[in-house]
Amino acid sequence: MEIRNMKCPNCDATLTFEDSVSILTCNYCGSTIMIDDKAAEADRELIARSQAKQRDAEIETERARNLSEIDEKEKIIDALTQNPSATLGIVKTVLDIIDDIT
Ligand SMILES: [Zn+2]
Picture 1 (cartoon, rainbow, N blue to C red):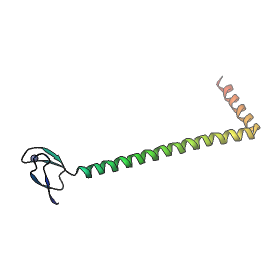
Picture 2 (picture 1 turned 180 degrees about the horizontal axis):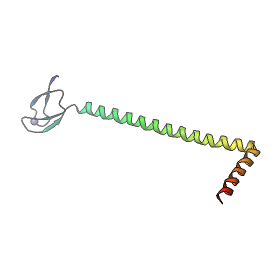
Picture 3 (picture 1 turned 90 degrees about the horizontal axis):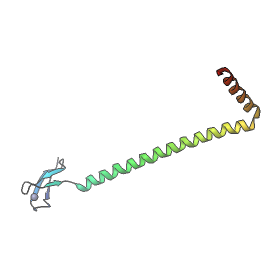
């Protein structure tokens, strides 16, 4: 733990504090002072940036999933158009199922 000094921005009194505190109350004028505003802001920025990066990764994953789904459907359509008898087989199966239901 380190002891630090700073001037109260309100009354200019010299304040002594431990570097573990983030909020300080001036003993002279009673104003509340945020310590290490810049460090806190840098932290916030870092967090915001990592969250943005995570969002990007999620969007990318979602897009890859959609693409592979489309790819899968296209493969099935390709297979069906290249093999009409397979299409017939599927149609027959569907008709059989409908038959079973009705
Ligand atoms: Zn003060």
